[in-house]
Image (cartoon, rainbow, N blue to C red; front, side):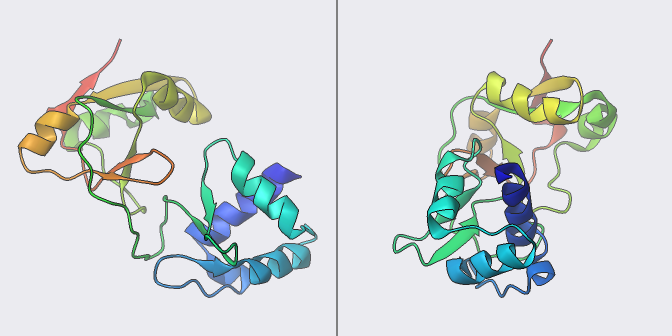
Length: 178
Protein backbone atom coordinates (compact mmCIF):
# COMPACT_ATOMS: atom_id res chain seq x y z
CA UNK A 1 0.00 0.00 0.00
CA UNK A 2 2.82 2.44 0.82
CA UNK A 3 4.33 1.90 -2.63
CA UNK A 4 1.02 2.88 -4.24
CA UNK A 5 0.79 5.95 -2.02
CA UNK A 6 4.39 6.92 -2.71
CA UNK A 7 3.93 6.57 -6.47
CA UNK A 8 0.73 8.58 -6.35
CA UNK A 9 2.43 11.33 -4.34
CA UNK A 10 5.40 11.40 -6.73
CA UNK A 11 3.05 11.69 -9.70
CA UNK A 12 1.02 14.50 -8.15
CA UNK A 13 3.89 16.47 -6.62
CA UNK A 14 6.35 16.10 -9.53
CA UNK A 15 4.23 15.91 -12.65
CA UNK A 16 0.46 16.35 -12.37
CA UNK A 17 -0.91 18.25 -9.37
CA UNK A 18 -4.13 18.85 -11.32
CA UNK A 19 -4.83 15.10 -11.28
CA UNK A 20 -5.45 15.45 -7.53
CA UNK A 21 -6.93 18.95 -7.61
CA UNK A 22 -3.79 20.34 -5.98
CA UNK A 23 -2.52 23.89 -6.12
CA UNK A 24 1.24 23.82 -5.51
CA UNK A 25 2.96 27.02 -4.50
CA UNK A 26 5.93 28.33 -6.50
CA UNK A 27 8.37 26.07 -4.62
CA UNK A 28 6.23 22.96 -5.14
CA UNK A 29 4.65 22.76 -1.67
CA UNK A 30 1.12 21.42 -1.14
CA UNK A 31 -0.89 21.53 2.10
CA UNK A 32 -0.71 18.16 3.87
CA UNK A 33 -4.42 18.29 4.69
CA UNK A 34 -5.29 18.59 1.00
CA UNK A 35 -2.92 15.70 0.18
CA UNK A 36 -4.60 13.51 2.81
CA UNK A 37 -8.01 14.36 1.33
CA UNK A 38 -6.78 13.58 -2.19
CA UNK A 39 -5.37 10.22 -1.07
CA UNK A 40 -8.67 9.36 0.62
CA UNK A 41 -10.55 10.29 -2.58
CA UNK A 42 -8.31 7.79 -4.42
CA UNK A 43 -9.27 5.05 -1.93
CA UNK A 44 -5.89 5.35 -0.26
CA UNK A 45 -6.94 6.66 3.17
CA UNK A 46 -3.91 7.89 5.09
CA UNK A 47 -3.47 9.43 8.52
CA UNK A 48 -1.00 12.24 9.12
CA UNK A 49 1.22 9.79 11.05
CA UNK A 50 1.20 7.39 8.08
CA UNK A 51 2.09 10.24 5.70
CA UNK A 52 4.93 11.30 7.98
CA UNK A 53 6.21 7.70 8.08
CA UNK A 54 5.95 7.46 4.28
CA UNK A 55 8.09 10.61 3.94
CA UNK A 56 10.65 9.48 6.53
CA UNK A 57 10.91 5.87 5.35
CA UNK A 58 10.99 6.46 1.59
CA UNK A 59 14.17 4.75 0.39
CA UNK A 60 15.02 7.59 -1.97
CA UNK A 61 13.85 10.38 0.34
CA UNK A 62 11.75 11.77 -2.52
CA UNK A 63 9.55 13.93 -0.31
CA UNK A 64 9.93 16.38 2.52
CA UNK A 65 7.59 17.92 5.05
CA UNK A 66 7.86 21.55 6.05
CA UNK A 67 9.20 22.26 9.53
CA UNK A 68 5.70 22.78 10.90
CA UNK A 69 4.41 19.67 9.08
CA UNK A 70 1.68 21.62 7.30
CA UNK A 71 3.14 21.24 3.80
CA UNK A 72 4.74 18.51 1.68
CA UNK A 73 6.71 18.57 -1.57
CA UNK A 74 8.85 16.44 -3.86
CA UNK A 75 12.55 17.23 -3.39
CA UNK A 76 13.42 17.06 -7.12
CA UNK A 77 12.46 15.32 -10.37
CA UNK A 78 9.74 17.74 -11.42
CA UNK A 79 8.47 18.01 -14.97
CA UNK A 80 6.25 20.91 -13.89
CA UNK A 81 7.58 24.40 -13.24
CA UNK A 82 8.77 24.94 -9.68
CA UNK A 83 11.23 27.41 -8.22
CA UNK A 84 13.39 24.95 -6.37
CA UNK A 85 15.72 26.08 -3.63
CA UNK A 86 18.51 23.69 -4.57
CA UNK A 87 21.71 25.42 -3.48
CA UNK A 88 24.73 25.66 -5.77
CA UNK A 89 27.37 23.32 -4.34
CA UNK A 90 30.90 22.15 -5.11
CA UNK A 91 30.70 18.54 -6.25
CA UNK A 92 33.23 15.83 -5.56
CA UNK A 93 35.79 15.09 -8.28
CA UNK A 94 33.51 12.44 -9.81
CA UNK A 95 29.78 11.86 -9.95
CA UNK A 96 27.89 9.00 -11.58
CA UNK A 97 24.78 8.40 -13.65
CA UNK A 98 22.98 5.10 -14.11
CA UNK A 99 21.11 4.38 -17.33
CA UNK A 100 20.50 1.49 -19.74
CA UNK A 101 22.26 0.52 -22.97
CA UNK A 102 19.44 1.67 -25.21
CA UNK A 103 20.09 5.33 -24.24
CA UNK A 104 23.89 5.19 -24.66
CA UNK A 105 24.21 6.22 -28.33
CA UNK A 106 22.24 9.44 -27.75
CA UNK A 107 24.02 10.16 -24.45
CA UNK A 108 27.48 9.65 -25.92
CA UNK A 109 26.59 12.03 -28.74
CA UNK A 110 24.56 14.72 -26.94
CA UNK A 111 25.56 14.25 -23.30
CA UNK A 112 23.11 13.92 -20.44
CA UNK A 113 20.01 16.05 -20.93
CA UNK A 114 17.20 16.60 -18.42
CA UNK A 115 14.46 15.61 -20.86
CA UNK A 116 11.11 16.66 -19.41
CA UNK A 117 12.62 17.32 -15.96
CA UNK A 118 14.35 20.38 -14.59
CA UNK A 119 17.77 18.77 -14.13
CA UNK A 120 19.93 15.77 -14.85
CA UNK A 121 20.14 13.66 -11.67
CA UNK A 122 23.59 12.47 -10.63
CA UNK A 123 24.70 10.12 -7.88
CA UNK A 124 27.66 10.43 -5.51
CA UNK A 125 28.43 6.67 -5.72
CA UNK A 126 28.59 3.96 -8.36
CA UNK A 127 26.30 1.81 -6.20
CA UNK A 128 23.53 4.42 -6.16
CA UNK A 129 23.87 5.02 -9.90
CA UNK A 130 23.69 1.26 -10.51
CA UNK A 131 20.47 1.00 -8.48
CA UNK A 132 18.95 3.90 -10.44
CA UNK A 133 19.96 2.44 -13.82
CA UNK A 134 18.75 -1.05 -12.91
CA UNK A 135 15.15 0.17 -12.54
CA UNK A 136 14.72 -0.07 -16.32
CA UNK A 137 16.95 -3.00 -17.21
CA UNK A 138 20.64 -3.86 -17.00
CA UNK A 139 22.42 -0.82 -15.62
CA UNK A 140 25.20 0.98 -17.45
CA UNK A 141 27.23 3.47 -15.42
CA UNK A 142 28.64 6.76 -16.63
CA UNK A 143 31.32 8.62 -14.71
CA UNK A 144 31.08 12.41 -14.78
CA UNK A 145 34.16 14.64 -14.40
CA UNK A 146 32.24 16.95 -12.09
CA UNK A 147 35.13 18.94 -10.65
CA UNK A 148 36.51 19.57 -14.15
CA UNK A 149 33.05 20.73 -15.25
CA UNK A 150 32.94 23.17 -12.32
CA UNK A 151 36.40 24.50 -13.17
CA UNK A 152 35.15 25.10 -16.71
CA UNK A 153 32.11 27.12 -15.61
CA UNK A 154 29.33 24.58 -15.06
CA UNK A 155 27.16 24.69 -11.93
CA UNK A 156 25.95 21.84 -9.79
CA UNK A 157 23.18 21.95 -7.25
CA UNK A 158 22.45 19.64 -4.36
CA UNK A 159 19.00 18.42 -3.43
CA UNK A 160 18.22 18.04 0.26
CA UNK A 161 18.32 14.24 -0.16
CA UNK A 162 21.86 14.14 -1.59
CA UNK A 163 21.02 13.95 -5.29
CA UNK A 164 23.33 16.11 -7.40
CA UNK A 165 21.62 18.19 -10.09
CA UNK A 166 23.02 19.63 -13.33
CA UNK A 167 21.36 21.48 -16.19
CA UNK A 168 23.26 19.36 -18.73
CA UNK A 169 26.37 17.19 -18.84
CA UNK A 170 28.16 17.47 -22.21
CA UNK A 171 29.49 14.20 -23.63
CA UNK A 172 33.11 15.42 -23.26
CA UNK A 173 32.78 14.99 -19.47
CA UNK A 174 31.47 11.41 -19.59
CA UNK A 175 33.31 8.11 -19.33
CA UNK A 176 31.50 4.79 -19.71
CA UNK A 177 32.59 2.50 -16.87
CA UNK A 178 33.30 -1.16 -17.62
